[in-house]
Length: 348
Image (cartoon, rainbow, N blue to C red):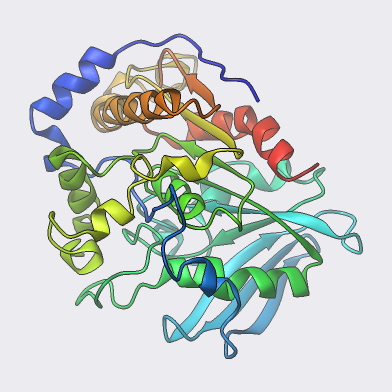
């Protein structure tokens, strides 16, 4: 596996943004649940499905796309995931889990993932022999197990759902072969990196797009708190106060040793307007006012994590785009760039 680094620009901009306190003022790109270097006691022991987890129903939206409703005992409710299916459905295949950003399907009133609303993911995977699993919901949850129920966001036990309850059901119903990878964007990027470091036996590879993968700095914790607060939640109900050990247990950078031997892809832009703002038919430079600072902060986060991986001599494909704000058109492109890494992880 090779480390591939493209042109880097704008690091000073990202540092100045974080130093100015902007990170604490706005929701910044992702953070999730991670611990890795060695296995956390009890984590891998949870890899078997809970006896009462079951598929309640499957609605075939098309012959290649299923809405699957899973009764989750950990969360005490039915959770929808959508599954993109290959043409050859009688043949066993690997599974790619793809996590959303902070809204997590809110735009469609949680009828579908933002991935299917904002990108051409359905067409992209049409010729690939893989199940693609897209959780619906989880706004501001970081796809982690919260320490306590939240008055606004309710019960969140996404880690248990995604790593213990769901995979055996997906494999049994949709001919999964037990080989998995995980990817995410923004909030979901850190969540994906978190989950693979906490469950290295479950996933062979990971892709993080415009994410933040370190909880050690106060600014990073503030960014997590701001992201959770975007939808009315309180991150103290997730990982406690800032000194709580849960923040370290869910820190991909601190637990990066678990990534050794995995296929790893990370990408980020600079926050500067690019072709989707300035090109023909673009949204215009004003659209960069929000997405620009967010991506600049993600750039700083990514360089911190990249430096950590280099120090550990853990190979990764790292792509720094010389432009681009925090937005879906760039993540659609990043998905294509990440596919060779994910394809290798999935054994395709």
